[in-house]
Image (tube, rainbow over all chains, first blue to last red; front, side, top):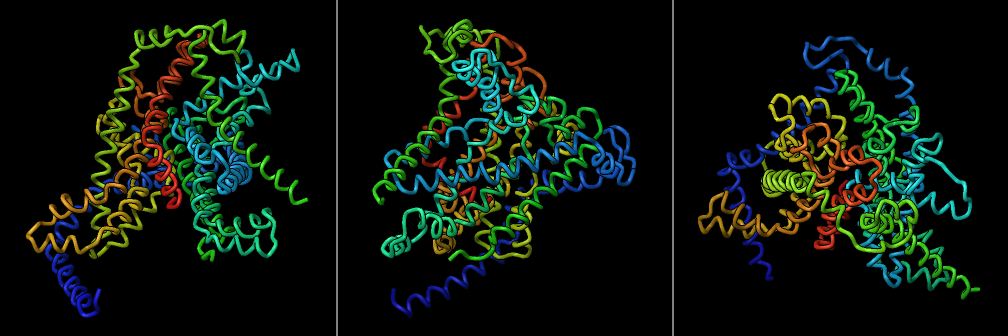
Length: 307
Length: 277
């Protein structure tokens, strides 16, 4: 494109964009209004409500009564809530290490483009297009004592083996963990995306310099997909904060409070018409989500460029 | 030395791939296979293939229960909420992508920061809202909540795809005398179709699989969605495994079929949602 022509064009562009804009302010805000309404009614109003009512005693019929920090005090002295926090920490650590680690491992393998890598990628996605509810049920059957494949497999070697994985302590915690542990395809896709963006010359140069495959992976590939791994960690920890079906459809928090978590407590409080208490739990979930984001951003230095 | 390390590398690579495939499909395969066995076969030989193919359990499910109804409920709720939210968010994403106006950055920041709010944290207020609108136990109540869910993610995706459409097209149309709405609807909307498909597929899949709000906002049989049917079936026939497995199969298959039909698109969608997430 020649110089003067394109300059003329940009000038023309500037003028016409401006005229379009001033002429259409009304339209612009009209177009924005539906999104703003969604934001107001389904995000802002709920968040303001949960924060405000978390300081009240409220049954949904009478007016909320201000009780200060009582709900929070009750939460932090309630053993079910404390166990939920402990579980959340344990699940988050497992998610950030084993779950994300497996996803990264699969990505590194697929990046080598072995035979069948596309099929593997496509198949790995299947667990993710099925509802978490269905997946929880499938694992409930896998771990069932009489018909489950796990126990039937073990009984081939140890004939009298009987364990109710979802109903016995301490196995229940691990049974719930297995409903999601290996399904980290999102991490795989994210990391794979970043790996594909690494300039080929980089790995080739390293190989020419005598680096082994392992060294290339450890020193070049992994550091360069730091952001994708960090995003994966955030996604998988926030999914633990919000984990519901995997517990509600299997153990419902039991045995005892072994597999309790905050969403289960929250739903139970709504059913018991303890709205103030339910919303205090909601506030904690909200804060935990923000905490995760900030912490992982900091640890993975995600705001800095990788190159 | 070099050679043995290479062999080790290859063996490891294929073991990881084999393991991935097994954990992803074997459980589903086992469920589908069991749906065709008798209860006795499931109990006595959980690993064997069914000896004869029997659709009795499926026939029973569709006869005795409103399975078709659950399916239609899911379909109506997900299709309507996805289409309406696509329209709403594409209008928002379009003006944010293409125009400068006071409050633009603020609105975009507010819309996208909603990504941080766990869906369950808002349970009580949204429950209250649906009650107030008298939409409890009504599929439109569920659809209403669903249509708000993809706000942040759709804004990211749609804003980016509208930004990729050259402004010169809008100007040319404006000079031809096209109005604001025509420029959006006739020029930009069709050209943003890959972004719209991405956001649409993601929202549809999320809604299709959503369990939490569906269980919170409905209780009657004729408002049940497919994921909810699962819970109900475990209670209804707790020891009739054939029917349970058949029910699971029916719940799981539509999602898988949809995925097989739009495989590439789904994979791209998930990858791009993660990047923004």
